[in-house]
Image (cartoon, rainbow, N blue to C red):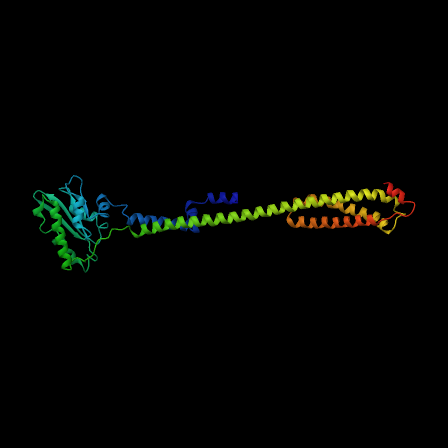
Length: 337
């Protein structure tokens, strides 16, 4: 239990000190790690993306609202090429469109289009690896080539998409653009979050199971000990009752034999002499039995051994009484009783 004074002292600590103590503990470090992982997942998952980037993360085509194009058919034309086409509304800032998808479409060739009367206004940005260093020339060629020949298909945008894919395939064949397919998959942090969630569920379930199993075993052991203790108490009560009945039976004999003790034989005198000692020990035992019922098993066992010892003494005195014979002149008195 937490000390109230200590809890009050901790509550009065400055917030930075309490935060340092929290994040310095294993629990706090775990919480901090989860927060970092969640932030990383949100950042790489595109929490700051605009509508264009969010669409491009899962598609190779973006069509601005109000622009007439069968987006599904356009996606089928591009297929799994590392090619992304943005069809924006007339007069849109094409350079800004390219910047919007720089992270979402990384590793692809991006072509931004918008209709300008009878032709397309175009802006290409090849987001190739090392595009600012050793692949700068290849990226420049790709940006200049990807939109060749599409102005003749302003009224047929799907045919314009076909021309763009042909230009892309030529760039791949020439080695300007690296070959390969575009794979759209969740970011690594999302996998880590999913794995952490699965592990948390499995670990939590295992912990609950193990804790419940241990609690069940402890409860069963406690109940077994309690039942065994109750059995010992019942057995002690029964043995004490038997001993009490033995004392009652011996007391009746003692009442008859005590007046003739002087005239009796050795067994007669032994019984009259030893019985009071047994009664005294029995009287001392009664207080011990009462206290033992509320005590532990060791105390119960000790008292049970004392009861058993007194019971054996009572049995011995009963046999002595049976062997006792009063001398002549006293037999009639004993038999009449």
